[in-house]
Image 1 (cartoon, rainbow, N blue to C red):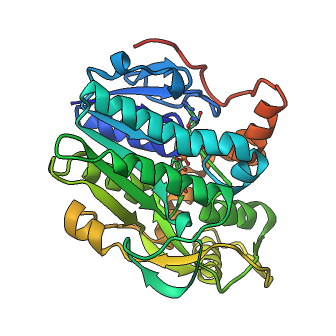
Image 2 (cartoon, rainbow, N blue to C red; image 1 turned 180 degrees about the vertical axis):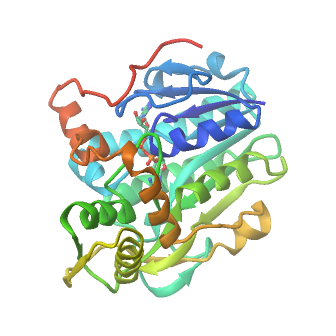
Length: 333
Ligand SMILES: NC(=O)c1ccc[n+]([C@@H]2O[C@H](COP(=O)([O-])OP(=O)(O)OC[C@H]3O[C@@H](n4cnc5c(N)ncnc54)[C@H](O)[C@@H]3O)[C@@H](O)[C@H]2O)c1
């Protein structure tokens, strides 16, 4: 099977692609390499904007996976115009040309953030979505556009992912558990802005398995699926990060609790992904922290701007060439 992964050089793609190669798939990546290239040399590299991909370019692929775009609220708020182009128009364009090219399946990286501010009920995929901020709106627009294209010969799967955390060769330290881990490790203190807010957390290894389950699901499967390892309040996440770090490395971690307003609050049901995709998460917050402790030697240059998406975007927008963490992107397979 030949796969094209758009945005595959990012945090999710850099963890997913080695696993896809292990399973014997042929994998190419189209990416702008904003965060450098941390992919295995076996991955084919197309160093360009996905908007420059044509129907002809996609003719040989069986499946296309969309992992590109501006991947958090601070980036979306910083450049709303780029956000709506890359998060709404880009997935729509790529799905449209993939279908024209005869690709059989398109998998879209959606987000639970489209649920917005909910009222402490468990949301399944049939519940109303209500985000009124650029990131959530654009992820929903992208999802609606690609789902419109699904039919008997073109499967479309949207994975509404919780906030991912854990290690990836392209590391991010701007995601909830990873951020708390860095703060606890470097400052001996975690600040919780609002302990009551609910968030579905997705361990990176579970995110990778969700994509594999989607890619390998029966050709008749299309649809929208919530994927998460578990639902937690932010207060509980802080307690678990603190407890695991104190137990593993014996250092005292202080908690500072604030009560600031947040515009996202949601918990989700993953029953549909379990029943249709055979997605069964294996990890929890303490497991994520254990993995981060094991791998921390690979990202302990904690202040490296490449670990913080908003810092890289600001540099790109101001015309700076960004110093990447590893070898430069190579063009061609
Ligand atoms: N990380 C999370 O917690 C999370 C949660 C839910 C949904 N998502 C979604 O999953 C996807 C992957 O997230 P991530 O954390 O790996 O993101 P990331 O920011 O680490 O990587 C995104 C990649 O896409 C590339 N890119 C962006 N626009 C492009 C374009 N037009 N053409 C080619 N390449 C382009 C960037 O260079 C980068 O390598 C995103 O769509 C994000 O919105 C992420």
